[in-house]
Image (cartoon, rainbow, N blue to C red; front, side, top):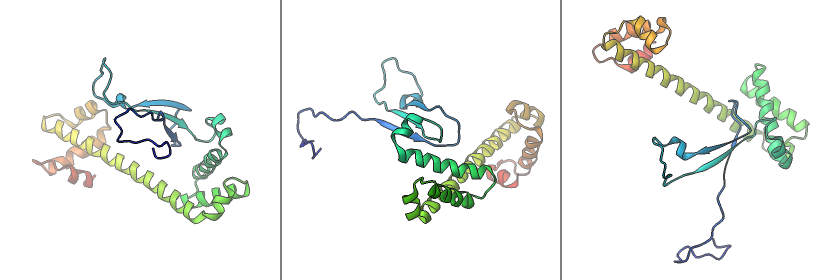
Length: 202
């Protein structure tokens, strides 16, 4: 505002630049090169009159081999994409995360990919990427724990209603052996059906 000499307290309408919200995606799930996300897609109801608040984001896939035209225009983005792909290739080959990162850094420095940056900040880059991968693993574990607890809660609910384990397994489309195990543990902690106790005992 200062560079444009604009007074935010003025009663006159001020012209401001049109905002653009861009998300760079480099996750492991397969996604298109470009897609649009709208905040209104998450609202619980559809409104023919529109919404009081909307936000639109353009998602660009920057995984290696995607959005080649964009990569040609931005060399650093291409090099970053190459570097992340080099790490993932080594992980697919069975290397540890630390070895995969170190090997990818060596390859990139030798191939003039982010050479100056990786040479100067090798230790910091290694630390940040290892922490990022650890966080991804942690989040996967959290989601898995959440799914298992939801299953336990559903099984206990149906068990209280008098359903047999085989019927519960069929209704929930789960393995009968797992459902029977949950039911056996649930009967030990009746009548409170403690979800945490059952989860820890599984």
